[in-house]
Image 1 (cartoon, rainbow, N blue to C red):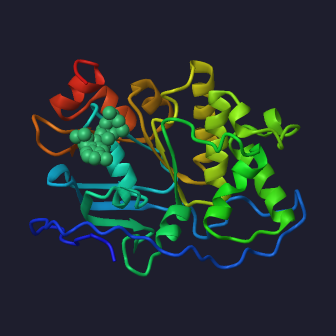
Image 2: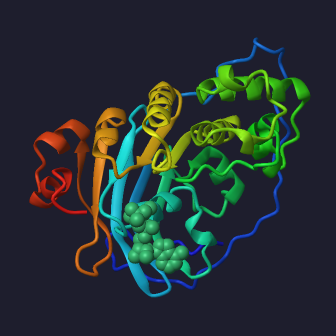
Image 3: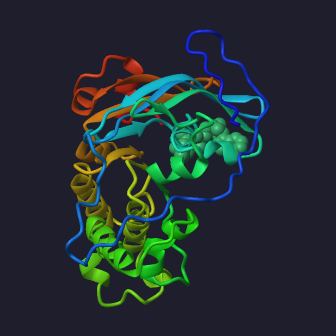
Amino acid sequence: MTQTVRSDDSPTQLLAPVRVIEPVSEPGPPAPGPLHAAPALDPHPGGLSSLDARSISAWFGDHNVLDRVSLTMPGGVVTSLIGPSGCGKSTFLRILNRMHELVPSASLAGEVLLDGQDIYDPAWRLTDARRQIGMVFQKPNPFPAMSIYDNVVAGLRLTGRRVAQAEKDWLVETSLTKAGLWTEVRNRLAAPGGGLSGGQQQRLCIARSLAVRPRVLLMDEPCSALDPTSTRVIEDTMLELASEVTIVIVTHNMQQAARVSQQCAFFLAEAGTPGVIVEHGDTSAMFTSPQDPRTEAYVQGRFG
Ligand SMILES: Nc1ncnc2c1ncn2[C@@H]1O[C@H](COP(=O)(O)OP(=O)(O)OP(=O)(O)O)[C@@H](O)[C@H]1O
Ligand SMILES: [Mg+2]
């Protein structure tokens, strides 16, 4: 079903890439409750989810871009991924929610466990992985002609869920509130998403991700196209969300990594070799007393 090879210690093998295209079919929605009387947005029992990447290798064609990268991203902890351009941060992030396999030449090896369950297991549908592990991209990508309201619930439509109007209304308000956008748009929900500012559009995309109630939210340089004020609003939003959803963020901004994350991983691809994690651990320790001289050079801005 997938191109995953599970081989923790043995040499990784490259299998022919397989594009996975599955029919979208989801179970029906929970019974809608009245507006303002719904349960908390994150109903996942047992607390926040943990994501565990084990021995991840990745290729584009025969170009090996990640080599046996392992990282545990615990629930309740914001993890930042840092490193120079081209070291494989985005590739790693896309592997965490099965987007990598959509590139025709792409293949991978290793395991990604969400609360101990392998998301590449054939029993997992692609749509399950995407719904439970959401992604926010560098450039805000709302549907520009679609209303703000419809943008928020677009993820439900794409996964084929049929949701009653009352639940939709609740999801729109709750998701926009969580994304820190509700008060700015509550009176213009029918206006097109493309009419919002860049920072608002990015928060709309965060709301769209939250509406499908993910267990993990992946963010790939979510503020790199934004002004400092919008960046600060998104960072505040992340800090609020951190108690409800496990967050992994790629950033080139060391101050941002320090502000929003408790765990940090430094990726590096040296001299044509595939990307690896040089060092990971407590964010403040990484910045104040890094163990590896390459980490020290990077966090002090001496390269990259
Ligand atoms: N679709 C693709 N096809 C072929 N090669 C790719 C593709 N996407 C990425 N790569 C290559 O994979 C390697 C890792 O790229 P990736 O985008 O993961 O790096 P990154 O660390 O996110 O960089 P940046 O900080 O610039 O975003 C690079 O050598 C890149 O050229
Ligand atoms: Mg990238």
